[in-house]
Image (cartoon, rainbow over all chains, first blue to last red; front, side, top):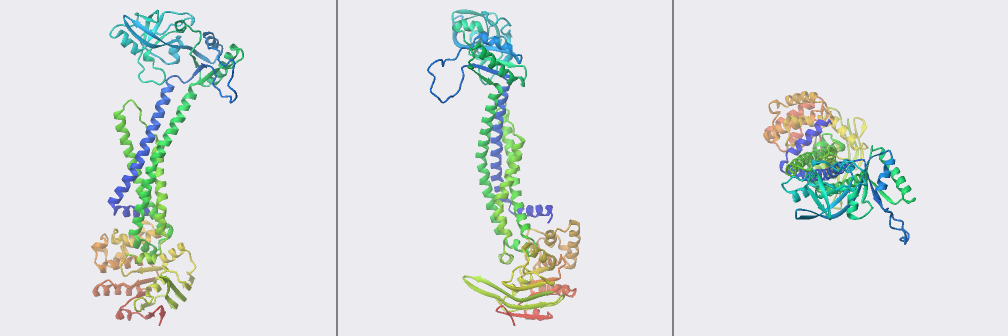
Length: 401
Length: 219
């Protein structure tokens, strides 16, 4: 029996039951559509977050003071407090030639005021390198100048929100701002970053790191951000940093190094897992659709009993009958799957129009796996009815009218 | 060509075993015209089904063209059936969603005959049963006699040597029935072995040989 004959036989058989076929296609398409839509949502969220992280800089190493480790033994009684990270530590890192830029960061909260307007904000102390490391851009003025990090200059760069709230309609650059009891001159305004993961630079004042340390009366740094020259150099840089800090800290390995890509990878893994979980939950509806296919096939076999007997009398083998009914089940599911993918695409397009900022993306593998899953479902659930048809006794089948 | 030796066929009906065929010994030669007669429940249909390889005897040996067919598996049986045996039923058994031509085509589709050859042979077959004007009509647009002629064309499309007919005129008026019998007898004259079940004495007596069955035995 030739393939086109098998297909045409099954198609003709399906065509005689339009309402039943419509219902089964509807059920299958809902299952497939929910799987594709949920996969697309998960996948889009993953890409969104990964992109968001990568825009922060891919060759980024974050040096944190202190070491997180679990030893499993008694909690230490002495010397548990790590040594502080200092500006000198940060500068020493330039000894590694894999490093392109170093931005020491000191963070604290302080009230800022100008002309009677006062606000409590995050003060971030850093150097000119921060602009490069965090990919910051300015809407007005300049960023911190390249100068000795130890110099406590009285200048600051403010975020967009602060500019709007303290200087409203006025020009901010050149104005004076009081932080705690010190006066700083505004030299630049950051461009609004919109929704960004991590730190909200819009609601922040950036001052030279030495000034921040003076404001908060501390020598220690919150962290050091390091950008390496290349992605390949990153792991060498990690080793170098560890080595340099160890030397400076009397042989104690007391900093934690976090690479940007390990953070990205973690998010990547978490969101992939979430996507898969959500898709498997949605695929329960596919199983339900599969049971419906099975039901339709039972009815089909029962209704066409005499016809099966006839085909056997005309010389059809068991294999041929099995193949005819499986093809019929597969055709039903496939039609449902195609409709489902189409339905999913339309829904995603509608979502894209409603949320233009979020990039909706339906991966090609999701489409193909949806089609494959529907076919497999059809074959699994179609096998029992088809086997019943194939195993029929021709004489009894023929006598059934 | 058809040789039945000590054929028995028993059915289990509600815990009781019914002896539908009881020690049947029968030889039918090529080109013979045989009618099988007997009262209802005498085993006529069972005998025809066994000859058609649709039913397997409980015991005994059946050889077709000197090949013992009682031991063949399902696929081999299907092939032997397809190539050697045409079957005409009392209730026609056409597929309602197919046209006359498509119904005739089915055995060739199952046998995997190429499309061009199929179309040619269907046209010839329609001509042979005088239905070339009805090729695209579906069964519900045809009369009983026309339907049975389509069924005969279908039975003969693989050019089998044996044509089995189970009450082929049982559901037809006498005039259409007459036409069908003439068609079958014409085929018989072209060397097709014809085995026909009938209730009708006058029809049965037209055969060269009459086999009478009572309670599963040839008398």
